[in-house]
Structure formats: structure tokens, C-alpha cells
Image (cartoon, rainbow, N blue to C red; front, side, top):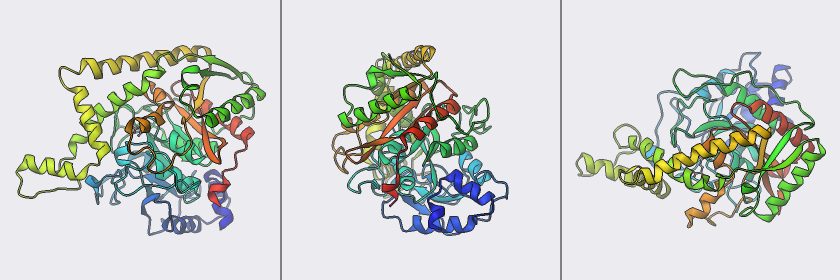
Length: 472
Ligand code: GLN
């Protein structure tokens, strides 16, 4: 069985379909691993083995770890927050249902930053997650539990959500693959909302093929989410082995100042490799990218302040009554239930939306967003993809940035522009810097996921990254 645990999700699914691997045994082996987790990656682990999948199920019964903010019927879905402690939703998120229907049953719920706000997983009410490469360091966030679980081999594959980088950045810091799809490719129904115009679900996997396979079964229009479109055609499994004729744009704004020297060196080495595979690599410009972070930290908190208004002690989870009247109950519940970062975002967002300040902050941030969309449109007129490092740093020490929210926010410097533009981007492992993983980000136009993953596959193959130290 330990051999089976070394397989990627696609390989395990193929072994099940070929009759070489019993799905119940695979599930049980992963269940035992997940239950013995020492990284803090999980908030719930299945206690029963699910029924065998249909013999031709494309995902073969290979178990799936799911970020806690996806609603799962009858199973705690707490989004990393005290205010939702013990909340068991009456329904399951569309994407979790789709994946289960394709043969990937729920193995575990994964720890995360509270309401997906954070870059280190230290904002979880249920404790931090440790990076399997170095347990004194963070796994990234907010999908830190999903990333750590996959990197450590505690789950074959996982899903998370990305609002400004929360799939890509933890994937980079843990040495795995993370895909943020085009906004609208995947239904948000049943995802506990952070910032609705940005949130997207996506896979965190051991390799690019697994990302394509999971994404193929996640994408689709859903009548329960009017912003979902699905993908224009079936997602292809990647096969590409070279990059001949592929034009890569390297934006100077995201590949210079602020990027750690070791991360930059790994990025530049991969650009060389891309050239050797036949790619044309040229500088490109995203003139508004330096303003993306400021715009994001107005738009995302503004939407969060509205989304989080529903947690009032009446409808879900925690209620702190005391002898207060109704308003008192609301405020006591929210004071006790939300953590410091969530409160900071609610205050920022409420301020940005208040009359008198709306035009100066929220309105201007929306204008920056439009400019970014135009920047990418111009870049994709000349280039197939825009490439950058995923995170400006490798995994940092637990506690290193908790006292300085602005330093923490800089973790998203290279990922937020794509989020604001609504375009897809993948992070693939890009070798080590100082013994810790770095990520290489490939972004493309809306709905170019198959092409992005194909290019990522060629690079992945040439990079031959060995993720095994983390799984030892
Ligand atoms: N780290 C970013 C934030 O704190 C992004 C989070 C995310 O993508 N969910 O907002």
C-alpha cells in the first residue's frame, strides 16, 4: 500500500480502473495517514470508508481533501472561524458534489485562514498549519491545510480557494501545483464567501496532470451560481513536452524589487530552461500591477464587510447572548466570534464603502481594476502567457509576520493582479532556494486553462522537481 500512496491522483485512479488497486484500501490508508497528521492540516477527517465508486468513475475513488470553507452536508464547515464553530450545513457545495460524483470522495476538511483572509494559515481559529518542509515555517495561506496535506502525502489531492493568491501562494511555499481558474469557470455555490467578485475554487495537486484532471471535473455552469459559466470546451490532459513557438512575457513590475534574491534566481533559471525548450522569452509591461495590491486591499475587504454581515448570531454557529438586547447580542457574538484579521478587514471595508469616502477609495480601486484588465489584454496581444515568481519569498517562520499585516499582505504581490483581472494562473514547483520550495507562475487569458496546463506540463517535465523530501 505504501507504493500506492506514492502515486499521483491520476495514477491511482488509473490503477483502480485497471483493477490493480482497491479503492477502499486506498481510502483507508489515506484516512489513517490523515488521522495521524501532526501538521495541523485538518479540521475533520472521515471516520468511514465510502462505498466503492462506479467502475468507470474517472477519478477512481481517489480520496479528496477539501478546504474547510466548502459546505459539506452534515460535516463541520467552519471556514477557520470561531463564529462558525460546530456549524454543519444542510447542503454540499456544487464543486464538492461534482468531484464526488466523478469518483473523488471526501477524505478530510482542511485547515485555513479564517474566512480565507491571510497568507500564512496563522489566522485560523483552530491553530496554525506547519510546513512539511520545515515545521518551524508557515505553509502559506489561506489554503495552507490543503497545500501542506498534499505536500506531505497525507492526501493525494485537494481543493482550495483563491481570492488573491490563496491557492497559488501556499502551493508555491509547499512545493506543489496550484491552479486558480478563470473567474466563473467553477461554481461558487456552497463556498463560504470572502470577496465574491474574486473567489474561485481550484485544485492543489502533486503534478500538473492531476490539476487538469481535477479541474476538468470541477468546471461547469451551475444554475445555483449565476456568475458561473463553466469552460468553453473540455479541459484537456496536458501532453506537451516542449515550448516551441510559445511566447512568454516577463513583466518587469513583478520580477524585480521586492522579490527575494534566491526566488529570483530560481525564476531566471526557469526562464533559461523555457528558452531551451523553444519558448520566446521577452520583457512585457503591466504598468498598473504595482497598484494591484492597494486596489485589492480595498475591494476584497469591501466585499468581505458585506458578506460577513450575515454572521449575526441568529442564523449560523456561535451566539453570545448574555443579558443583552438584540443589538447587544449581535455585537457580542461578532466580538467573540471573529478574529483580529477579520475585524480589521470588516473595518477597512466598511470605511472604504462609506458615503463620503466611497469614490476616493472603492471607486478608485475599481478603476485600477479596469486598468489591470487592459494591461493584461495588451500583454496577451503579444504573448501567450505572462510569467512571474508566485511568491516573493520562500516559506517564512511562524510568527515572523503576524505583528505586521502590511508585510503579510506583500505575499500576494505577484498573484493579486491576475485575481483582479479574473484570469487563470497556475503555480508549479520551481526548485528550491535555501532548501525551501519556490513557485513559477504562468498566467493566460480567460479560459486558457488547457493551454496554461500544457505549457506547465512541459516545464514540469524539464524541471523534474523532486517533491519527495516533504513526503519522506
Ligand atoms: N492573502 C490574501 C488575503 O489575505 C489572499 C487570500 C485569498 O486568496 N483568499 O486576502
